[in-house]
Length: 77
Length: 435
Image 1 (tube, each protein chain N blue to C red):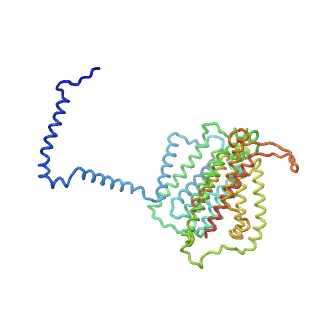
Image 2 (cartoon, rainbow over the protein chains, first blue to last red):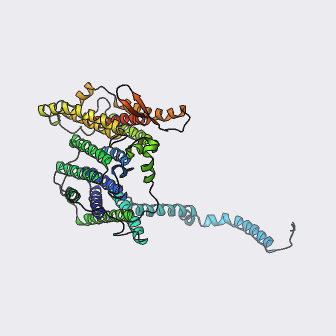
Image 3 (cartoon, rainbow over the protein chains, first blue to last red):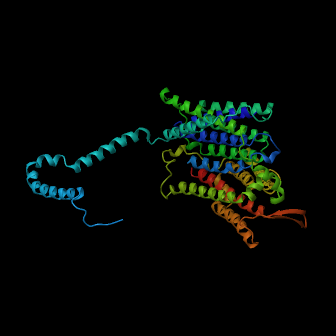
């Protein structure tokens, strides 16, 4: 499962970077969104999947969500 | 060591004398030379040679810098991504950090495979999307699949947050849909496209390697066992994530909401400053008057009646999340996002002016109030002579509720809750209203 997720992370980053490098503003925004998805999955996977009860996983990852919101909204300007 | 004034006729003395003599001769001859060579010298004084060479160096360096400092964001991003690929990927290969097939992998299950496949399809389809709506919705689809994966990987807090953020951000995208440029079929030459593709694929591959490498090795013992053991005894909560946010890492959280609040105020002022009386914002200026969208009041009866009921449910659920946060999935941050989502629903159904009239809250003051509450809970710990932001908890007998756990962390979380609502609604109303 981890390998599959690692591949998914790779694809997310690939598409994200491709979109960010394009000219249109909307594509860049969507690209950053995809990049953040990739980052979240990466953080979660690094902790190891399914190694314990629920709250154990993704422990610090929660606080990474708000910077992302902030960046998204900032970029939208 | 001995020091003498006079060493005899040594080489140094002769050299000094020679310099003096030469100086006298040159001074004598100089007047005549300047007359003879006037024309020649005015063309090529050393000063001019110096100035010219400086100018030449400047011109060369400018043309060299101009080769890579193009002023285009894309090029800079390309450099950054390439460097990341080279440095991270290269060092991973160099130290042989990629461990493949080591450690115990979780079993592959059907649902996860489906979710991942949908995610991949959605992500890969985005660059090919022909319309803006399709691209936005595809991104939303990817987001929801990520949420699903969070649930499957047992990170309920993260999944809740992700889901609400996804709802709000897709809504926001559609709210400022009109501002976003139309998607053009990008007709790019292959010469431009190929490096982009190579960089993108290289970056993706590097990240995959990083993920695999991170799985294979754990050089230090993880700190998480500390949190698992002490969350209930020290923090008094069963939800480790929440205890982590409000208690163990309270300081982080406090400044995080401060930064968030400042950012949203910055957004507010950036947008509002353009709205000097008499001038229209740049974005709207070129739209003819009849094409202006009518945001004032939607008259969708179904949406309005559902929104009225749903709003109450959403707010109740948001409060539940807030109070349950300490022991179950939830917490101030998620609860606040939930409440914001409810307000967004209401403002889509009835218009932002209506929501402002019904709930005349100054969201910028709400941010300030939230941050102050969080700070004050921190300062409150000085009264009891303990370090800043020390949280405590206890069990009390309350008249109606029986034995109840009360924690100071809840107060801190209240600060988080208020400021996050303030931040979210401030941004949404600012962006949504300046139409």
